[in-house]
Image 1 (cartoon, rainbow, N blue to C red):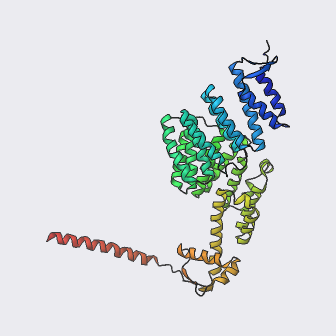
Image 2 (image 1 turned 180 degrees about the vertical axis):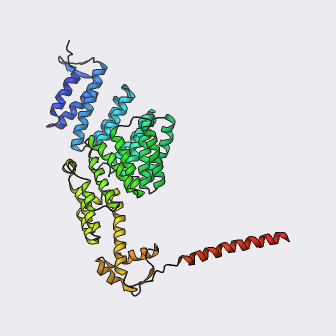
Image 3 (image 1 turned 120 degrees about the vertical axis):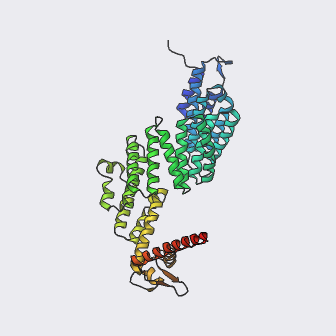
Length: 438
């Protein structure tokens, strides 16, 4: 026997038909579906009995439709008010698992509205929801949202706040033995430590994450994230061959899922080739055949242009590429870090080549030869002297660089010094023994 639709299901169907062209009207109807308990039947208001399961299904659909409207309109306050309404009228009557799913869906909806991260609205909503979870003793949901908040702090470069949350969260989740959530936290911890430039701890957290991953089923998308982080850490250690293999694993995983992060890993694979001093041909060969057609774009063009500029050892070409592809290269912190190191190395080598024939040279002349401004060249030369990459001094009063001849000491000289040092120890030892005999 066919089920007769309830008033709520009919109202939901009508509201959905209005949501594209009359969103305000649809919003009112959907809110009535969500919280209304009465309907007009035969000219009088009367209670309508509904099966709980059908009622909850209709209300969930109403929430989804409302979120679609609010996201389209960029109405953050509407989503916040909806969450408050659900806390009062809906969550107390449904299972905790369903509540957790809906809360995360609402937070995801706010995340989809542009500007909510930068303005701190999303972080504020997470903090408010965490307090509600504490008052309602919803431990599992609180831990999930705290993990989300830590990730938001990482994105907004508030690393210490992220680490404070993760430290406490790690202790709690380890006690509960929730390996899936523990894996998420350990991977996030690795990312935060890397952002803090603490590579040993970042690597240790990543190792813990990989150990945890071996004990459970890991979805392909998350496995791709782990491989991607492993590649980033290996690249930071200048082990570009290992980094390339990790990025390749991540690329294959994301490509099989049609995940846009596949293109990002392809870019990182090219970066590894460049950093390992491969030829531009090797860099271009990373993107070949069908892969080239699928992922061709300014990101990959930028990496190929960098490879050509670096092979030519041309600072000007390098700077032109950085300027032309600023969003593709400068906005990616991983690429920016390694290209900055590459540029510094190129600048140092060019400076050393220029000043090699001189014992005294005007800094302004060096700047004109390398085609950079005077302050940049002066600052770099000063840094190279402090780092002992250049044996000389800067006479800033006269604007002159004085270069000293680097003398290589004969091996016999160092051997003689070592012999005298050891003889000194022997004489001291003999003197102490002579004193003890007395």
